[in-house]
Length: 255
Ligand code: XBP
Ligand code: MG
Image (cartoon, rainbow, N blue to C red; front, top):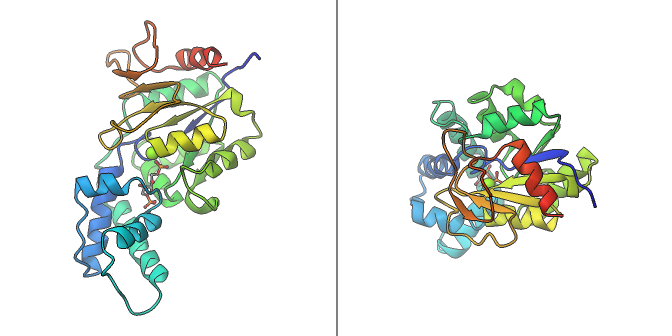
């Protein structure tokens, strides 16, 4: 079947920007403000990233790492309060201008627009966090370039469930065969593959050693003409960075 690249669907955390270290810091600030002596180290956070969604991650931590934690009143309400505080901290840290987009992301977005390739976002994080990332990078008006922003709780089940990608595909009214998902994690890959999407992975320090079986390609970054990517899995021929023509060839070659 002839396929054409009609849309790029971007994950956010770890893909558009290397945000997880900021998320980790925001969680720890929220715990400190609440007088809870939890301090998620990088290594613990790396383990906790197996669970997507900040509220789900806190609940998982209590169950598996801090079962002695008890509170008066409703636990889910307490977790929701902690997550609200964490999100406020994340916005504050982002607004300090600590983070830019990963290499090649701005160029790829511009190229997609120039080629008439539609854009969408499929993320587990909250819309608030997506907006603060855009506000501090491309500008909040750039979010309008993305026809669909599928974020957080718009679906009942988070990645690795396919729900968020089904949501985006449905809103785009597009055939998954004509799209590519860009992700950074095994959870994201599983979610996209389950929704029938060919997927390109750009790893980061939290995800580099995860299992990316089934990915079309695994590289360390999108790269730039003067900043070649490193290939972890897949065949890139003579290509040294991700651009729309190369992604199109990858998609055509996968069908
Ligand atoms: C990554 C996640 C999110 C973030 C934390 O989302 O799983 O939970 O780690 O953000 P994705 P929240 O890679 O799908 O963008 O606390 O807002 O969930
Ligand atoms: Mg991600």
